[in-house]
Length: 141
Image (cartoon, rainbow, N blue to C red; front, side, top):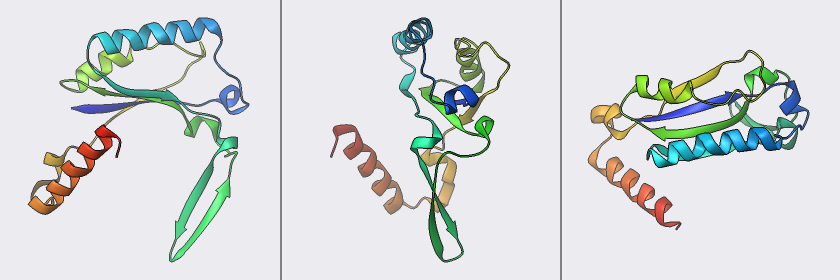
């Protein structure tokens, strides 16, 4: 099972603050544990929303909204994508994350859909397309 561990943003991160050496060291140590355990698939920090945009689809219209965005606590500051046996194992890994701000905050864990989750709606043709796309992504073409 794949899970995304989502770090929420805060006013400091949205203000452009970057991690200090101590936090980078702690996060690097944590990432190394994930890699050695063979569960880490990806993980990155994100720039503040002031450097991003939202694309809004409303009816038949498409519009672009430049950052920054209002509610920092609703934004994502970074993520890990891990592959583990179950939600309990994802929770155990999440509980080991260094607290980046030393303040109260939540870290969200969400399971990633797998092909099997779609049942009969994922036809053999759609499944073949998905597998082909995944293989091409892995080899970078």
